[in-house]
Amino acid sequence: MDNKYEEALPRGVALSWGLVKSTQRGPKRVMSLKQIVGAAAAIADKEGLAAVSMNKVAASLGFTTMALYRYVPSKEDLILLMQDAAFEISLPEEISADWRENMSIFVMAIMRCYQDHPWLCDIPASGIPITPNNLRFVDWALGIMQHLPLDHQEMISIVVMLTSHARIYSFFGRDMDRAVRTGVNSGPVPGVSYTAALEQLVTSERFPYLRPVFLAGAYSPDEDGIKDEHPYGFEFDFALARILDGIEHYITAKRMQEQERDGSPKSPEPL
Image (tube, rainbow, N blue to C red; front, side):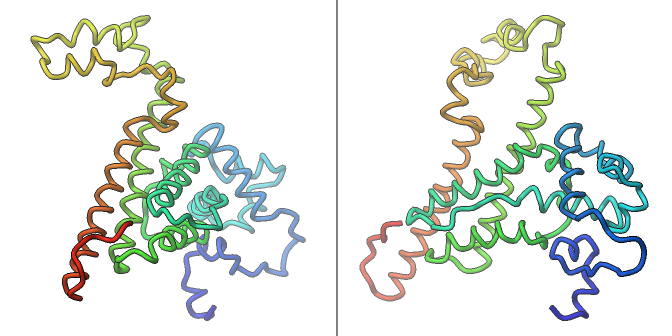
């Protein structure tokens, strides 16, 4: 890489790519960047992102905070490295012929990262992905779409849409799980569940359309048996399927337009 561009990169980004050369001055280095990022992620996994501090990470490794700064210049850089490391998971090397199946695998892989590291939801989006593991996800998703009649901007827009779907539901699921663990949603009255309370509050007179939905169990469904079929919730799977339906409809329309321009038969090609 050109030194001019390397020097212009934010420090955390350069570290993620292994572009920062270690200095020969000072005491011999006994920690590794991977150890530091792993220790920080372990703290965040257990106590949340807010619990991560340079002092705490250094103490967990048995070093001083000043020693840690020789590896990572700031907490912001550390969080960026943690985020990229969280997406260091294996993706299928072979891509199925079914693009919808591949899209689903892509979204589920993102969901798995968020599920394993719920603190990812607390990191705000600060720009386009630029660290290696994040870019690997984007590259894999683009590979799925190489044989579809989509231009570069359309493919990136689909990646953003699917990534956003995973992030939104991960955020919602994380907060719901947290509420259950802390007892926040134990009910408006201690010892009374929301479901029992809503059964009394959601009457046909007040909410004529919500009442039958609630009685059917669709508003606050029992989780028994549902998690096995829909690990991330029926709503997540339903919405993902409808997103893929929309993409499929768009692709079919584009293929038909291309056939019309070429004077070919108008029957759509199988996707």
